[in-house]
Image (cartoon, rainbow, N blue to C red; front, side, top):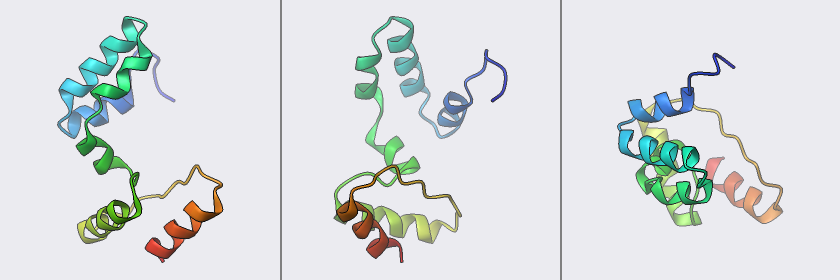
Length: 92
């Protein structure tokens, strides 16, 4: 997926305005401390890119996404019936 010397995810996240987070996460990996990387990922970045949280927060974020007019693909990496049922109730 593209040249090995480019990190497209990092470029996108920089475009979202999270340059400091990208640099901090990159440092963690370059210094062989990948376990420290999640601490440098701001909640706002997660909210901008994913629906991850308790049901009430997901419902709120889903409304924000709907109002934005942006069409996106929803990828669910979960097989828990309760979680999938909740997601279906919120989305449909």
